Amino acid sequence: MKKETIFRVFSRLPVLQTERLTLRKLTPRDAADMFDYAHRPDVTRYLTWNPHPDISYSKEYLEYLQGRYAGGMYYDWGIEEKASGKMIGTCGFTSFNCSHDKAEIGYVIHPDYWGKGIAAEAVKKIVAFGFEKLNLHRIEAKFIEGNLRSRRVMEKVGMTFEGYEQESMLIKGKYVTIGTCAVLKSEWESQ
Figure (cartoon, rainbow, N blue to C red):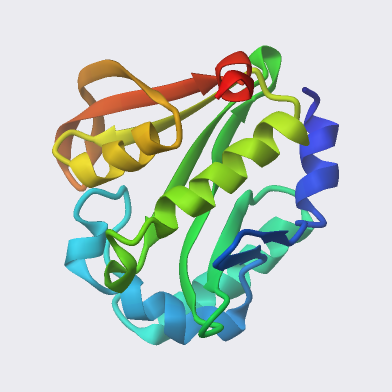
């Protein structure tokens, strides 16, 4: 995979559809919906970022992302529930390793939608996009030890748990152990 491909695809982020979701570019109009989940400590407990302090922070962040999208340097979709039109989280790629045709994905969902298969539905669509449109060989996802809910999402979409890296990241002033799950294109195609 080439960096030019990433730029070409993500500078014009395609809209993706699932049964219940529209995956689309985030916009500043999503500030209230983003703040609704991003300000909550229960949401950010297992994430690398702190809760948003106020809605203006969410709006400024979303405005900043517009330039990242335009430069093909932001790889997340907003997750919109079709039934309500509400943006209920994000899902996408956190990084690419072009030399090895692999990528890492990440996601966050509003807690009102936990346990309903929303995360798995979004992740499955992004993984399929990665293999079919970006021709990736491997897609992985990482989670902070203790976040079993996230690990279950990864395994539900066909990823295999590969193990833990002990205290491998410094997050919010504390070293945390990181688990990795992954799926290869050949495994995905045989499912």
